[in-house]
Structure formats: C-alpha cells, structure tokens
Image (cartoon, rainbow, N blue to C red):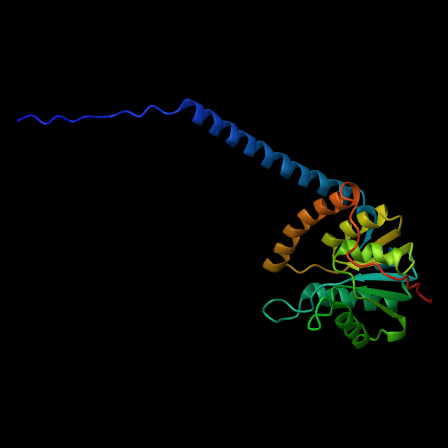
Length: 231
C-alpha cells in the first residue's frame, strides 16, 4: 500500500519582502537619527552651561534674587522627596550666607491639593527664611515656564538658580536664550532608583528644550500681568 504525500511549496512574494525590508531599514534609520539628535542636544545643553554650575558656595557670585525650581515634596510612597529636601536646605543656606536676598519659588499649582510654591515656602520658613523675602510663582508648570516668567513677569535679568546638577544645565540653557544672566548653585543628588528614572527623563527634556527654544517658538502656558519684585 502506497501513501502519496503532496507537498506544496509557497514561493514568497518578493515584492512584499522588498517593501518589508525597506520599512525595517527606514525604521532603524529613523530610530538611529532620533537617538543621535537626543545625544547632540544633551551635549550642547551641558557643555554650553557647565562652567556656570557651582557646588562650592564660596565661589558663587552674589545675585539679589534666587529662583528655586519646584518639585514634589513627597515620593509616590509618601516618604520625603530627597530632591525637594536638599533644594530647600541649599536655598536656606544661601540666604544665611547672604549669597541671595530674595527668592522666587516657582512650581506647579494646578489643583488645590497640590501646591509646590506654598509647600516650598513652608519648608523655607521652617529653616529660618522670613516670609518677607519670598515671592511665589504659581504658574511654574515646568522649567521653561519658570525661567521665562522670572523675566517676563517678575522682571529679573540676573538670577541664581537652585536645583540639582542634572537639572541645572537645562535651566541655564533656557536662561541663556531668554537673555538672563544666570548661574546655578546645586543641591546634592540622591542615589536611588527614583533618581535614575528622573535622570532618564531629563535626557529627553533637554531635547524638548532645544525644540521649544529654536524650532517651536513655545510660550509659557500662563503669563498675565507683570509683577516686578520690590527689593
């Protein structure tokens, strides 16, 4: 008894395979260009500003006004956010050493349950900074907005920016484009998984800053009436 087996060979559609190869090649090229662009933007932002980032307070030039950039006071698990704690400690130190005379506390205040500027004010007052030298900016929804508003709303063309090192480069880069004579004094950075995630986001945020400043002509979400500081 014989069993006959019919085998059918399917010949690949060469046109479909050719299109697929082109799509795959194009995707690889696009992804490559994207990451090269991110790398180039990060190199530009850091190298153009790193000479004005200070960790040694004794070498820091005096400015009347310091801009403290906001962040959440608590982590997702409810514990104190070391980025916030270290920024507040650095800001209070700057005031006590008479390196600055007045603070703009700029941060997010989109809901009544989350108010970065008020939280910063409470923390600084607890560290001995008087309320009379504090101005709150409730529309600092992101770093770009905080920097632009410091000039356009509060009339400042010279600033000391207080934040962590990784963040300071982007803040100074934006300041340069806004014709603000700025330096940064940095608070210490925590070493944790949370910090690592923040650093990864910052790489892309620097690229976005370049796009905002040089291609998209971005404006802050809120401007409004001018409020010159009385100092």
